[in-house]
Amino acid sequence: MKSLGNIKTYEGGASNIPGKRNVIKLSSNESPFGPSPNVVSKIRETIRKTNRYPDGEYKKLKKTIGKKFNLPESNLFCGNGSDEILGIACQLFLKKDDEVIIPKHSFLMFEIYSKINGGIVKTSRTNKLRFQVEDILNKINSKTKIIFLAQPNNPTGFYLNKKELSKLVKKVPKRIIIILDAAYAEYMTDNEYSTGIDYAKKNKNIIVTRTFSKIYGIASLRLGWCYAHRDVINLMNKIRGPFNVNHVAQEAGIAALRDKKNQLKAIKHNKYWLEKMKFKLSQLPIHVHDSRANFLLLDVGKNASKLNRFLLSKSIIVRTMEKYGLKSCIRVSIGKSKENIKLLEVMDRFYK
Ligand SMILES: Cc1ncc(COP(=O)(O)O)c(C=O)c1O
Image 1 (cartoon, rainbow, N blue to C red):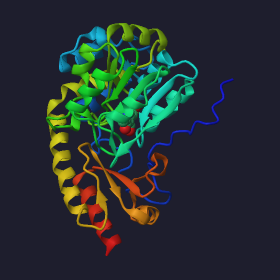
Image 2 (image 1 turned 45 degrees about the vertical axis):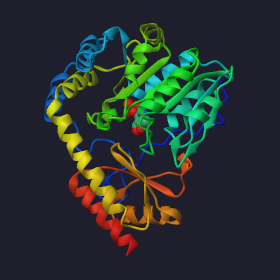
Image 3 (image 1 turned 135 degrees about the horizontal axis):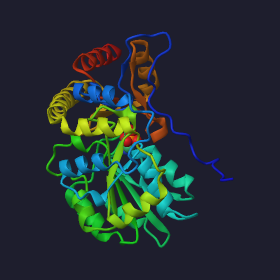
């Protein structure tokens, strides 16, 4: 049996508070709006066919992703959440004692999947929580097999700009796989941001993962996809389960991708509230990190646990950050307007 003693079990953001109703959940960076009406009606329609196995090659879904993002279907792979794809990539590329470079304070599943597959994690330094390309490059040795980068990073919201990403891609030896996790890509409107797909088109060693769990509002259905070189995709197809993406998720994903109006609405809402929350929260005696995604990392100093308890008492769930090595921080997702207003009021009250 594998020895998994050094692996921490992943705990998602809490969903409820015992004894409380009408809870405001800002702990998992999900869409606060839920699936669009078109997606809901597609789910209703497809649920009747759940006695049948799904299309194991999810041809229609790949076709729709390909069309929307202008990518050849042969470079696409889908998973039961992008999560599953990260795990499959580790299964594919890691053997015992291979090294994996992960920047400090990043998505916890990178470390978990690396270790499950025998990898040794080397943590690269950050400066003011920003990834340092030089330090990532310095950590490379003959045992390095994978470099993970969340683009933008969860929980900080920072990302490597195009210049930094270009430098990294150029300097990393091609035998090392770079996994760019772009779960929050749809929210990113900066010119300096790239999901990395353009780099993956030219470099066989890059995999870019994407998800339907955020802007598309179907986290519960578990659907993600990735772009990679077709040789990598072919190998991933050998590893995955035969029906790893269920039929409801496939159809809901297609409907979500087609619902451009809904995506634009979500982007507009997020942009407005992200800036507003940054501005309002920075008037409190806390440090607001400059995220561009659908969440904010707040450094509240010694008050993190006390503030979390206060928020819970007011029915608001945020994410505490001990597991990310950021004990003095909490992470809050952008919610619906009403939820954001309530959060701001409760935060104000805490600091008065
Ligand atoms: C950086 C990052 N990658 C991946 C995921 C998980 O995505 P999925 O729901 O597609 O597994 C998350 C979820 O919070 C995330 O923050």
